Image (cartoon, rainbow, N blue to C red; front, top):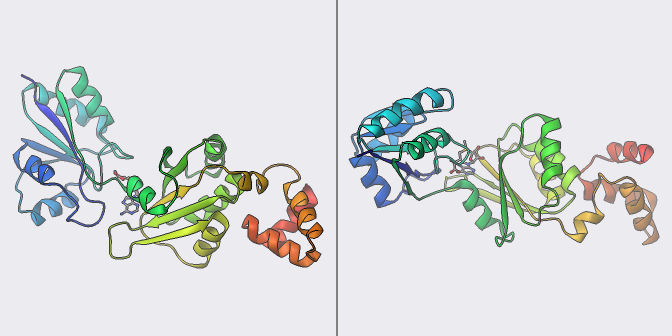
Length: 277
Ligand code: SAM
């Protein structure tokens, strides 16, 4: 009889966010494979659980998956945990699940916290149809390409982001997705939990004025007629919006100021783009 592979969700911050079933599984399996043994040891200590830990992370995933599959062949049970939340969600475990399936081992999920679901449900944006894109690419050209790929999807868009890239990613999102509604959920379930809601231009200006720290989920509304109108990427958008604002009675200076705010650009960038368009 082959063993069982359990994918066990652990907290994303607050240590109490773990299920009875997860604790029972961590107690009773033959082996726990985790990203960082010291990190998971803290969780086990908190719940007075003693069990054997082995590392399983992105750098040893291939070789370790083979080793873990051998344990499963011998009929042993293994729990996979990541540093936070649900294994396999932007964390390793794909390889071992694939191997376990190949050898006919049972694969069982022990549900619990997932950061993107919690960010989504507190955002106030629609949850009827959702696209989760993992991390936005760190390279600007790839990030722009990814944002272009997702901009028309008729669903709420959710991404993970890091504090050192957040400002650049928001600037790119504003440029590619247009000024649609959005939310930024930071440090969920932790002491400094913060949810910032607004449109992309507002969130961008908040983030550029404050040093944002901690773990972040970004949530963008689907494309609306409003954001189509404000799509800075379409040729002539800035100019036609300027004409529109002036025809509504705005002075040139005030209209340019408004444009900069709407598009989340500096006034000099607005001038520069108007000259190009
Ligand atoms: N497996 C995890 C899950 O189930 O959500 C995700 C792991 S991924 C390597 C780490 C990223 O998840 C962070 O960079 C952040 O974007 C997001 N994240 C994790 N914990 C979070 C939290 N407490 N608040 C906001 N975002 C969080």
